Image (cartoon, rainbow, N blue to C red; front, side, top):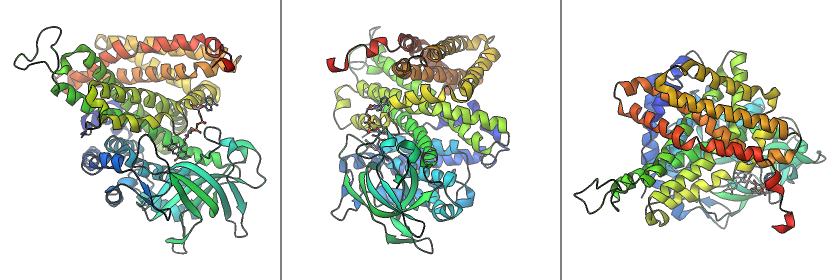
Length: 594
Ligand SMILES: Cc1cc2nc3c(=O)[nH]c(=O)nc-3n(C[C@H](O)[C@H](O)[C@H](O)COP(=O)(O)OP(=O)(O)OC[C@H]3O[C@@H](n4cnc5c(N)ncnc54)[C@H](O)[C@@H]3O)c2cc1C
């Protein structure tokens, strides 16, 4: 069975030495996040993840969820107790608004906790993750009455939340939504239609489930301009706000799927269910995007988290498994063979994982910090910059971290040889579970289109130019420091390549949209690698004093940084070449020749 130990030292290094969160102590949330508080939360969060959630990971995979004939769904053994422990421990309230029972701590800290949950048990972590997403959407777009009624219960996790977008005929293209909303005399709506693949649509963990549903009010315009958002509770709250009458929404079936078996993926049938409009009619996408953007960051972190857990197990296996002799002479002459960690090809795979994971964690945490600044900074300039960064980085975090995270999980499996493919070591579960992260919350292909089609040009390119300025400032500040020379030089090359790719897209993507579409995947990867180079530069700088003092963690950080620049970042050049080759080769074959 796989094991997991939260990478607390790395998390603390990022929060304290790289992002320097103490510098934000005058801001709401950060003022309460003293070093002691952060340490205590990380320590007990790690304990919760590894002692409560991780032991249920294999159970959840093997048992899966079961739909009973009455439509109720039983989650795997132990999930209900773990969920109650999460609610009672206040874990779900970490970053929620104190006005609604939250602790008001930084989202950054909540993200670190969610990383641990996803490493320990990705399928379980989706229930609280979506619940927080529903909380955020209602917080952003709900009426005062809706906030009063739903937020305290969603913030604590007493009630859980779901996101209902997908229908049989509509996945990526939400303009095709058919679910109907008919106005009722009392101001509510009658919701009718079918949603599919709804995560956590029905379960036995919480006393009520709050479905956020996209539907079309009768007579609404076609396409996404005619979509509204509704709250459809499983039990309609009574006058005291307690779960009352059972609503006409039911789970019509559970999907059998490749992974995340512990999470109930439901067909949800709405049969004249009472729904309550959130915000204005036909403006539902705006509020739903609050939930979707939060979930996209969460999905990127899921893949990073799974990669961390898989890597830890691969590293342990590589130290123990003996096979063959080192090509430079025996390293364990007392044994019949050397541990496989001596082989350069095994090292390559472990180092690829490690360089990705640590860089990706820095990137995700840096982005989460922007999410906090966007909400709590008193300075409008800082808020604007944070908003630009969040918007720009969200598709990159979602798609780059999941593409590369999935590769890392596969590398970790490969290190195990046949033991990776068979069940006992649990590596194949990591691969199966992580695979969905490339698909849901908008496929990675669609994230790449979002980056090149919407985010790059937003506000005249303000976001991307400010990202270039961030990197330029780092290069200017540290260019003369020979201890950082390989890192600064590597970042300089990568940022020049990203600029070149961006210019190419601006010049060629507008004149032929197929150029933008065909280049988008490689452009997103060029972007992701450059962002990681910036993060690795900053981590190397932060590790210098510790490394000089002989701190092993900091020495290892610099070693891994060198690996990233020598062995991972060169991929950026190949992505740039593919970006610049445009649509020609991609679109040349006639559709009927496939
Ligand atoms: C386990 C699981 C859980 C899920 N949970 C939820 C949930 O909680 N709530 C919810 O609403 N949905 C959920 N989904 C649905 C998920 O978000 C969709 O599967 C996803 O958005 C893709 O839609 P689709 O499957 O219909 O693929 P399609 O939209 O049919 O796409 C098929 C392929 O075509 C590509 N493609 C489509 N359009 C374009 C385009 N314009 N340009 C380029 N390429 C394109 C896609 O990238 C993809 O590779 C879940 C799905 C699964 C499998």
